[in-house]
Amino acid sequence: MTERRTMIWVMRAAFLVFVLGAWELSSGRLASEFFISRPTLIADQFWTWLIRGVIFYHGAITLLEAVAGFFLGGALGMIMGVWLGRAQTTAEVLDPFIMMFYSLPKVALAPLFVLWFGIGIEMKIYLTATIVFFLVFLNTYTGVRAVSRELIAILKLMGANERHVLFKVVLPSAITWVFAGLRLSVPYALIGAIVGELIASNRGLGYLLADSAGQFDTTGVFAALIAIMIMAFFLNSTIKVVEIKAMPWREQSSRREMSI
Amino acid sequence: MAAELAHPETTSTTAPSPTEELIRFEGVGKRFTVDGKPLQAVEGIDLSVFEGEILTLVGPSGCGKSTLLNMSAGLFAPSDGKVLYRGEQVKPYNPSVGYMTQSDHLLPWRDVVGNISIPLEIKGLSKREIGDRVAELLDMVGLSGFETSFPSQLSGGMRKRCALARLLAYNPETLLMDEPFAALDAMLRMRMQIEIRELCRRLGKTVMFVTHDLDEAIAIGDRCVVFTRRPGTIERIVDIPLAPDRDILRLRHDPAYMEITAQLWEVLAPSVGVED
Image (cartoon, rainbow over all chains, first blue to last red; front, side, top):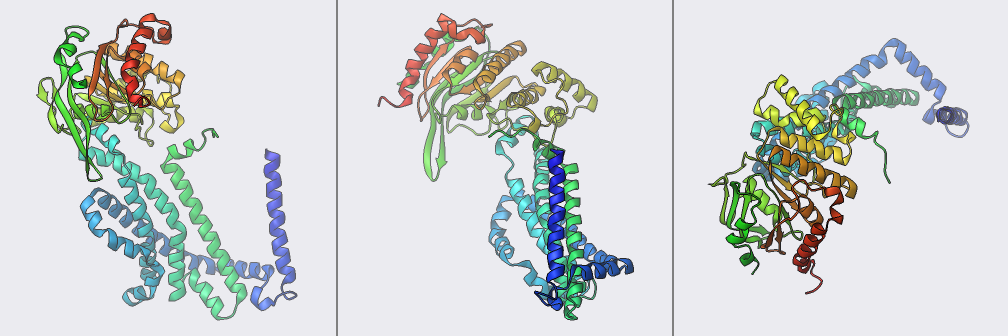
């Protein structure tokens, strides 16, 4: 089994070398270097930015926007989800409006947010928060509604009051769904921040990307994309670890033997 | 005609011993509205459940057996007649009963100890009291050694035991069981039947046990109520003529068991619906 793992890694490395090699060789021969740049140039640019702190400066801004928007939207989504999940009538009244707003591509709000909040990081935070809000809200709402009525009856027979039901069952069971929503939101949070920066900004990885493109610097564009990719990977890994820590019972269930 | 068979004389003579009447259904009927149409779930139910007995309710699916349990628990009120618990009309969420369903309804984020603790936490017991009581319950249902397992790591039988321990934790005098073992395989089912009967008798619990399996109804019950198809009425109430400390594992070779099974099967057979 370990032998197989080693082989997989070797083949992955070989694949990467092949793709980068083909890119490097075809650049200037099969396609213009102006459009596709070269891996060596991109690595060089990335390294320069890295040691000059450019990546960290812009990356920190983007990270701040994504994380702040993520927490703001996540918290509001969670609160609204639990509240509407419990308040049946209000939920029914609001349903068509929520669904209408939900179907709107949230990035289309960016110009409006620029008008309202300017081109600073607030605008990106609010844009990100709006996107994250809906994902977390809908997940939480579904989760709260999905709590079994049988289970609630069983608990009430045990003498549970509304507060017991809320804190012992509804909220903990909603956490599973909140995490599903949050997990889903991570890439979208980054999208919100980057799109916000692309539209109007003077800082952040999205700005770095747009600025390079504006100067017809393909190498810079690729280097910025790599920085964004690394950040997305880092964020996804973080939430995975947090999820396993927060819900140990989930990880263990996946270890059970499959029976098909 | 079915209701006539269940007249009070029949009921009183079939009481296993002169114990107190715990639950009483008086001319109980229940209608639901399903998709705008009225649906009569049960009709004309006269039935007494006596303290300390295990009463099994058997009948075709949808004959309203569960409806009777729900009314005993006070989850909803009857449309006609009265449901009395110790002589008083059942109010919402009857605190004297514990309910067990086919789905074990364990909380996946709590381990075995955490799940069993829930009713004790609701009662407001101290950490130490909860710990002592849970240890006692674990021992009672045979779950010692699985304290920190999550439900997802337990087998079907273990989950049932955990749900049972949680139910017994707050010591309700009556247990309402709605096909609790329906999802288990045959061997495990028999084992759970043996354990539940032994445990309930030892603890002196009164049990209303709903099942669609006649064999299970006879194996577990002191008395058995046979229902007709919807609208559910009582077709017959019989004493199970088996020893209180019967050997459920070897029942199928017991002539008395074979006789009562054959007899009740004839009562239940029309409900299969092939012959009409």
